[in-house]
Amino acid sequence: MKFSDFVNVDAIRAELSAYDKETVIAELVDSLVAAGAIKGEQKDSIVKAIMKREELGSTGIGRGVAVPHTKHPSVDELVGTVGVSSEGVDFTSLDGEKVQLFFLLVSPPDRPGDHLRALENISRQLRDDTFCRFLKQSKTPQDIQQLLEEADNNQFVS
Image: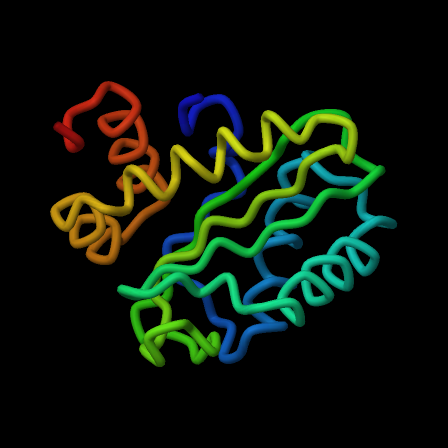
């Protein structure tokens, strides 16, 4: 699975204004609503579902990266977005570091395979230090989109 299979490019945010875990999640879900990937009336329910998942353990996986995600019946296919925070946000990450890169996923409950493949792709790409560094330095959604396309074309991971 590639980023282009699930990242909604119209929802990418190059400079998040959020300052804590819940507002980051809400801002990214808002971006999916604005892009038409999620129905507006489902926003609160999706944010709550992601926060409930966070209670099980932070999706801040370390090295400045978090992958908040949930399964939700309001979506018919896997949707996701990417957000960058230049300041970083306390996300109670496993390594205690602030998070700058966010990959948010919402998938239908009856498609767990897609969900897992997307998580696998994200974690594989994020093991590449160059990819992460370039993403953190991105200034525009177009910069981020180009990096995701390059990752999809295996220009980072060997």
